[in-house]
Length: 620
Ligand SMILES: *[C@@H]1O[C@H](CO)[C@@H](O)[C@H](O)[C@H]1NC(C)=O
Image 1 (cartoon, rainbow, N blue to C red):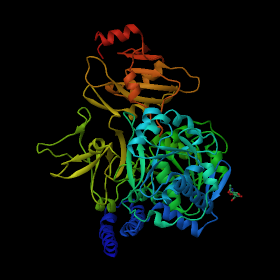
Image 2: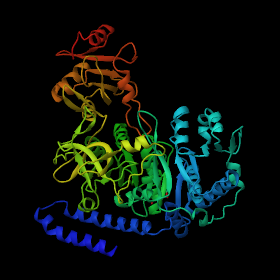
Image 3: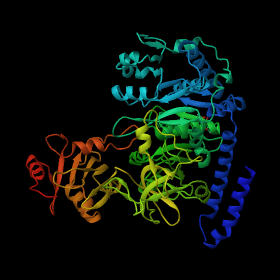
Image 4: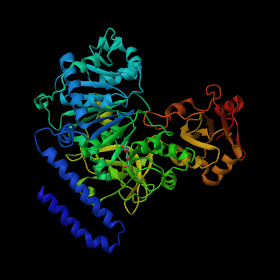
């Protein structure tokens, strides 16, 4: 450790004059960030060096000892101290130990929305040394069963309000020998046992750490499902070591022990659960938990609870900016927002409207092995490269062929790094410091995320699936997700770019852009699904003029679909694949459709036009 510190310090000193020489205007922020990284690195080492398990649960128990009476969870006008949550989780653990016979290593699926029950049920399960599978509360029937079986859970704990979803698949669960416990004290049915009554009867005395003595940092802790828009969800395996890294994110972002964080992102995903809830536990702070995001209640909630830190995703920030302006927009205590995906224009709007809030963009994937933080706060960037990170990890942006959907290889078969300022596929070397564990019971998908022989024979990289750009100053910009680009007339079109542009037209509130297949044409042509602002109508002239002015012809959406609401996934990512499949056939799509006629503008789509296109009479 000391040698590592000295080495880092020495490097920092050695690099200092050089940096000053180059008049790096980020020198001091870089240095501050280096200190933070070293601190976090040191803690990570402290925890991982020991053979013994030191999990997020142990962090929680430390805070229970140190500050038993501090408020931990605020949920729907009730608040619970660290000690209360601890005792409640003891009861849950004891109830499940007695009635489900759970012991260390068993996997339990938790099907529960954002509520206080979630927190102590999860903690209770960790006290028993169980692996917790966090099921997405939006999924149903076949998908739900799939999630359940791929983590191998033999017990399911379900929230009262999700009873119906489980009843639908109860027969199948019984066939698989799964025991179901519902967080309720009444309504026991065949195959579904009540849990709340059993929790009430259980003792709140602490459980012996011996119950989890066989676990170590490499033992699986959680399964988190990645929200694929195609196919069935995949369960990323998170072990206790991997669980800690995102928990430090709030500390890195500058959260203090007197902060209060607002958590409304779903707890079944890594941003809400790992960064939000577990990050709060790491700092020992108060969590204001909300069932789901509500644009109209957001600021009132923050005011009422003295919230100082919020989490976000890009869409949420835009929804907030789209709410009607109010006199008290700047009246709140929020000083820091941590999240990802905010667009440059929204970022500026947000600051102007809601005041001086530091926005800390970060980039990373649940199953990924490296992340970035925009610690400078430069508008539009998702992160900044840092020399310590460069020293510790190997990563690169490589040339990518969006049509073949594979990296470009040179004559020797190796990948090609893109120069600064150019877009490339982000890949990160898999190694001891940056492990990639993969997906549960899904070797095929796990292998698909690995890229072999990248720069030398036999090396192995994690394929992020994201196209990024790094400028000369080291700022990292998100360009697109693979699949979020389409190729048309030999050109790549980034869907987010077109959508951003469309959203600057008055009548358009939201745009979702994707590529659709057209008979007789290679690649895909652009189509945009639009949500109009208020009660405005589609202003075809204005839209046409705008795209003609700002977009090259190949990037202009040939088809427009007007929707009342744009469908989003559980993490507010826009649905694209389904819309792309539905295409532009007026016989299939009931929403109003428009077609961009060459040199004319948007005209309503008709069966005749559709037929002429598919018969290849109209060439696009
Ligand atoms: C919020 O802060 C104010 C002033 O510091 C205090 O009076 C109030 O009780 C706090 N509210 C909550 C819910 O803690």
